[in-house]
Amino acid sequence: TILILDFGSQYSHLITRRCRELNVYAELMPCTVLLKDISFKPKGIILSGSPYSVYDSDAPHVDPAVFELGVPILGICYGLQEIAWNLKGEVTRCDNREYGYAAIQINRFGNGDGNSTVDALFEDLGDEMQVWMSHGDQLQKLPPDFHVIGHTQTAPFAAIAHDSKPIYGIQFHPEVTHSLKGREVISRFVINICGCRTNWTMQEFIGKEIARIRDICGPKGRVIGAVSGGVDSTVAAKLMHEAIGDRFHAIMVDNGVLRLNEAKQVEHMLKENLGVNLTIVDASELFLSRLDGIDDPEQKRKIIGNTFIHVFEAEASKIDAAVNEEEKKSGEEAKGKGKIEWLLQGTLYPDVIESISFKGPSATIKTHHNVGGLLKDMKLKLIEPLRELFKDEVRALGRLLSIPEPLVKRHPFPGPGLAIRILGPVTREQVKILQQADDIYIEEIRKANLYDQISQAFAVLLPVKAVGVMGDKRTYEQVIALRAVTSEDFMTADWYVFPADVLRRISSRITNEVSGINRVTYDISSKPPATVEWL
Ligand code: XMP
Image (cartoon, rainbow, N blue to C red; front, side, top):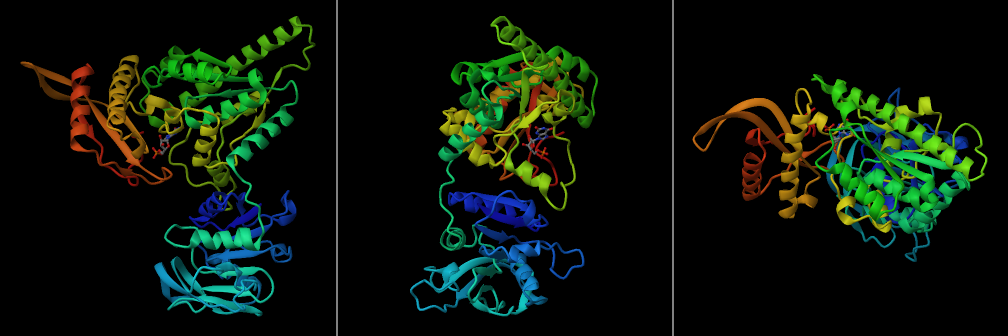
């Protein structure tokens, strides 16, 4: 394992990604973590960049034990300055701030046979590299026993290496794709210098994770989990099923604000295709009655989140009771109060990173509804098989678990569903209108083969009325707004540029086929300043 210590750079998670792409397992932890609190011994440590300057009074610093551990260290940008700060070099704010591309000239010291520790980081990478810089500070004086292994026109110490210990610092960011040989630099460090084995593969992960789940649950343990039809919950459910079969109980709550035929499709996929032990609870009446007359987006989210918890808990108790009954009948003694001890959560690595950041979680713009609240009352222990994975790793895992490609590539769908895509109060009629419009929209996107180019597409129902004409009659009906965005991580997003004929077809079908709609508009706002969802 490579330990990456995060000083708050926007690129820190990319370092983790790059290591894993090399099939080397890497974990990101806050820079303030103490080595004595870590359960594994890393084979190497990478110090990330940071928005701070090492001389800021509140600048974050690593546990000095990092330099005593004897494993290779690579400092990137701020990480380089942190190494210098610890090992008595000098860093100053420089006049020539560098942002963007730079050419780095490589200096070599060994005899060219590649054995020198000093040369190992850039071994076989030529004499010059295009790299990406983004820094205000730079090194002014080398720490004792260090060599300069690379310089640019403005940064005389753009890359440094210790004379005999495997400690390296680089001013540029090898983790961003703009640094053309960045991947190779990371590979030199984690594979050649740290000697990591390249055995982090999804196939390997499945085997280990199934064994871990079986071990945790024991021969009888039961797990419940909510499924939504999205990628994460489907992959997590399938993995649980592979591990413990029908002792995993999936629950799908129909909250009345799902997409057209969604509950049926999820049932078909999970139960029939994937063999998962699934119960569907139709609680649409309850949700819609609680949403009655509610206009405020945050209130909608709260109501849906809380109602979800009630419904889920009630269903879980029913399953628990049924399991107890069955086991009693079959002569097995029911031990303890409940048979279900575990709750499956589809937590992904970015959520974990967010919650461990030393800066604390970022400001909440919208409260995302998840099932975290369940734990308090149900006294269930958490099981999170995806917590080490990034989204595209979950997709790769899904493919290996034979989850069909369209599901693996499905756009995200928010927990509060269509309730946050219907502006104003949510009623059955409004839900029906939006379901139909959304279904046509997505169908046409698929037909035009554009679904995979778009990160998320959906329709929004605007409860304003506009005048139109149909036949000889004047109409006065509601408006549908279409949204389609491309995005890496949904923190920022850009609106998607449709071919005009596709938009024309969609608009014509919606106004013709969906009664209650006589006008369609396309949302051309990016995030920021807009958000992806309208509420
Ligand atoms: P925003 O609207 O915040 O959306 O730009 C970013 C991504 O998050 C999804 N989203 C939600 N997901 N519960 C969810 O599970 C929510 O309350 C929620 N609100 C937004 C949104 O669909 C997009 O993918």
